[in-house]
Image 1 (cartoon, rainbow, N blue to C red):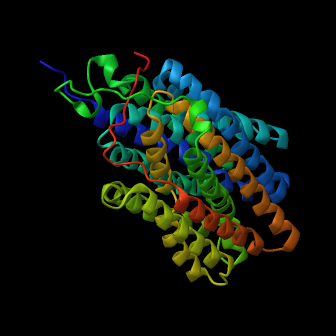
Image 2: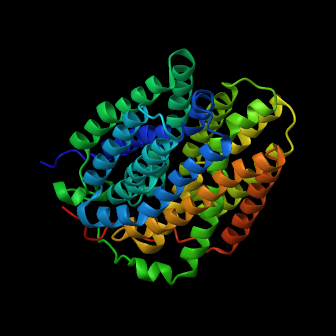
Length: 411
């Protein structure tokens, strides 16, 4: 008698891990105000610390991808989630700016590189082939729920207690909830427990050959998808980090930015679910073009906003077009190049994504300090996303009938 297929359990744990990982990593903007009040650290300096986080996260993506390809996702995700939790506990002790740079800018980023979207995308892709995009979309909803839950939690803790307590609580969430689930519930691959992707009990699944990273780097399709994805990174983290400050600039309270991001996260969760359902009918490329364009419009609206109600309209448009881009790009790359070296390939894709994310975060603070407004910053994001539209238009959509899957993976 065959054991029940545990793919849905894997998807749930990936969802839970992404909830914690993204929730923690995107709370940095919530800490800007108290760190400025207590220590006098300016916006440009704090933005540089977050840019360091984005850059280190990207630089460690290829290394984490290689470790995943060699040892499997489970040990990498568990160890990386532990590092994130410990880094937040250490952040509760900061008194000098170099400590913020080290604990959040370096240690948290390294941990996030190994338990964020890339690692969990590889994990889910090993367990599902025919339902890959649907399951990637479902697990990726954790990115939205993490923002929806943990950003407001961080804000409430900071306002009602102390920023140090907020760091401690967030760190314990990773160490006491996420890490145990990964250690107990995750298996590296279905083959490691005698199962096949998608729970195929007929054992007729034949893994196709997977392309190595060197082949991906020679492919125009890889570069078109990756460079378009980089424009996503530029705008995604500029908004996540700087929107709380922008809301204050428009006359809102210190908690308004977190509320706006929460609305965007809720809209993104709905859009993420719909993306998984619509991808087979309309194709991933078509959906990507639409999402890049909607976000370009949203950033243009944000650049011209002068009142608080306009921020709510922005939140809906931005939320619809934010996180759903990630499983679509992951799906396109995995279908084109297979799953055997997917960690290394996606690691390189995320490297460029994060280089642009770091640039967006830094320029957001720099232009705000230089000109006194975020106008230039948000318009530059809109222009970047229009470039993403053009790059994706040229991209070929892999056949949905292609039977891509998992080649030999660690047992």
